[in-house]
Image 1 (cartoon, rainbow, N blue to C red):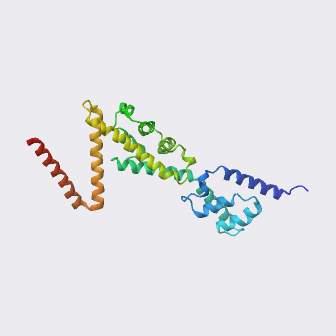
Image 2: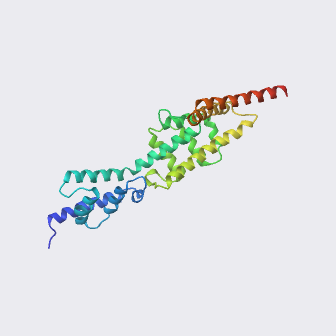
Image 3: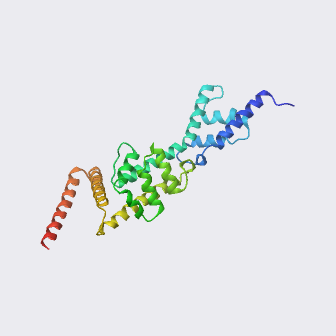
Length: 255
């Protein structure tokens, strides 16, 4: 007995659903960045029974009776878009991680994270990269100063270097690992530069860059102090620090 046209159509639809499902990033199965409803929809799409999927599971998951075709299709499309957007969610997490790390290292928000990255990397001469102790820190510095076309390309390049996976292959556990590796790389870069400040032949360009970076960090720290402690207390703290520096200078001059 030959299959009916209706069954052929159901099977073709099911094949398309399965092809779409298998093309999704692996993280969609259990990512906390997705709603529980979207994850349930993804699991339902693994069903080998097209009749059950299209006539029972999808209406139940969307919460719309079978006869309300437009609402049902809109609900399915919303789940589809949420699942397909997991890579964008991870990319946004990576951009936020880079932004927050750069802010913590003295470079506030600018036109975008690429602008932040270029300003931070600009504190170090191009020749300085050769003095860095490992491939990762060298690669991070070179990528932060490179002219990527958009923020996504920048964090994608950093992702492959720092965690060994492009963002499309990320899962939830990769996000904190990326943050840690990024923070560690920037600390290595700054630490290496600071260790050179005691050298008698310190590169004047590096010294100038480190002074500018220290000023930026001081300004960022002052802004944070104002936000947490209030303007009056922040002013008092900064005045105390300034008085301490002047006292040290006076002692050094009379020693």
